[in-house]
Length: 193
View: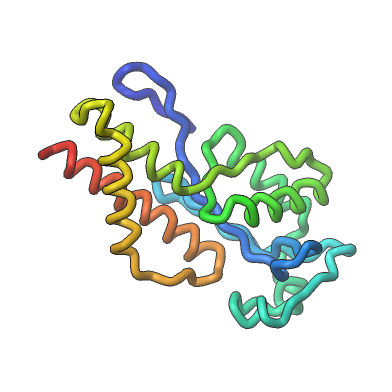
């Protein structure tokens, strides 16, 4: 879904995505994924391990609270989750707070399901925050001051965010979405001054 801005420029809807995984080791794999569109729509999926996904870390389980038996019993097939992600997320601007880790697990999921790892691409949520603030401020703040103003807004919002990660995909994706909304609101307040 995209919408046209007042100047006719096409703007792609932002989506905030998070994965939980079997561990933080080289052979780790995704066990849960969730995403939240900028308009608040969301989805969450447990992912059953593929046959060759054997890595498991009890310390990671203690953090996210998902037992391997649970994801085996309740998880969806890798192919089904990957297909749903491509259907739902292709053409959107995807953001994650840890794009190197989340990108690794996205790649593992897509490749295991037989898709190119480049079907979907993740960017850092910080980019979404900065881009949104800059877009709002560009008509009221001199170009030479945009970076300073954007940095101040994003820094303030991040400092006010006292929540800890839930280490579950949907709550963490919702938290990223909430930060983006907070930056958007702060930038609009600054633009109205």
